Amino acid sequence: MRKIVKGRRLVARSTIALVAGALAAGFSAAPAAGVEGYATDVAQSAIADMAARDGLSPAEAATVLRIQDASVRTLGRISDRLGDRVAGGYLDLHGKPVVNVLDRAAADQVRASGAEAKLVRYSTKVLASAQSTLESVPAVTHTSVGLDPKTNQVVLSVSDAATGGDLAALLRTADRLGDRVRVERVTGEMHLAILNGEAITGGGTRCSVGFNTNKGGQNYIVDAGHCTRAVSQWNVGPSQGASFPTNDYGLIRNTTGSAPGAVSLYNGSSQKISSHAPATVGQRIQKSGSTTRLTSGSVQRLNVTVNYSEGAVRELIQTNALANPGDSGGCLFAGSVGLGITSGKGSGTSYYQPVAEALSAYGVTLNP
Image 1 (cartoon, helix red, strand yellow):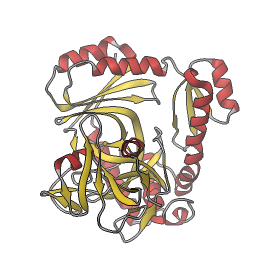
Image 2 (cartoon, rainbow, N blue to C red; image 1 turned 45 degrees about the vertical axis):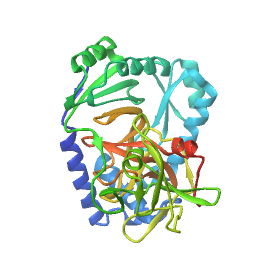
Image 3 (tube, one colour; image 1 turned 180 degrees about the vertical axis):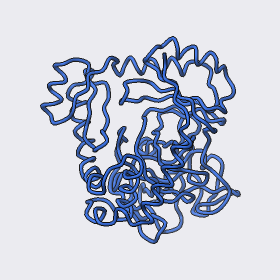
Image 4 (cartoon, rainbow, N blue to C red; image 1 turned 135 degrees about the horizontal axis):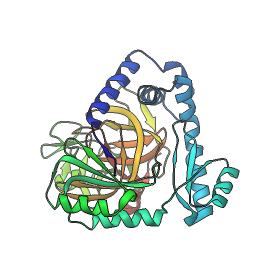
C-alpha cells in the first residue's frame, strides 16, 4: 500500500509562525555571528528556521551551516568515483553527507571516504525510468513529480485542485510502478509566483530581481522566464530572452548602472554571492524576494516537474522555504553560493530553476 501524505499546509504555516517568533526573540544572534560566508542576518534566519522545523539548538544549527558546503563536495567526489553504484545522496539533519549505494562493497568505500552509506533497492536509472513513465501520461495541472533520495523513491504530488488530463490514469500508472513511487496528497494550487505591484516592474507586472551577471562588459539580470516572457520592458531595462515553459529562465539587460554581486536582505544589508553550484537534498537554503523577503528552509527534492496551468516546467528544485506572488525571479542561495531562480509555489513548497542552466544558456557570469 502506497503512503498518502496529507495536511502539509497546516505544518507549513505553523513552522513559519515559529520561525518568525524565534527571529523576533533574537534566538540565534550569538551563533550566527561567526559563520564564514554567511551575512549575519542570513545565518540568523537559517538558524531560527532549523530551530523551528527540526528542534536544533543554535550551536547545532550553526554547525550545519559551517559544514554543509564541505559535505556537498564530499557527495560529489564520491558520486564521481563510484558512478552507477551510487543512487543519489543527501545531507542529513545535521548537515552530514549520506550516500545511497547498491552493494556492500560500495558502502565500505563510502564509509572510508568519510560519509554515511545507505543501502537502497533502486538505482538512479530505475527511478529516472519511473519518473519518465509518470511524465508520459498526459499532464494533469497542479501535480508534480520529483526524486526523493532520502526514501529512494519518485514522489508524485497531487493537489486537491488537480485538473486537466486524466488524473485516474496518472494514479493507475503510479500504482503499477509499486513502491518506486510515493503519492502525496496536498492542498492548494501549484502556480507561478507573480503579481502586480512594485520591485522590478513593467506592464503592470511585478517580479523580483534574480542574479546580476555580465557578458562582454554589459550587465544583465537572469530572472524567471515567465516574467521576461510576459514583459518586454522593465523599469531596470528590456527583456532579452525567455525560456518558458519547459524551463523557467529569462534575461533582462540591466541599464541602471548598478549590478552588485549580492542579494538584498530587505533590511539595508546584503549577502555576497561569490559562486554558484547545483542544489543538494537536505541542504539548508535561503530565498530572497520582494514579497516574503528573506526566508529559509531546506531542499526537499531535485529534478522536479511541476505542471502549472501555463505548462510543465522540468528539472526544478523543490524547497520548503516560503515564497509568494511577487517573489518570481528572486534568488535561491546557501550563504554565498547561488542555487536557483524562483519559479513558483505550492502548498508549503516553493520551486526554483537551477541558476547554472540559465547562466550557461545566455553565456553570462555572476557579477563579483
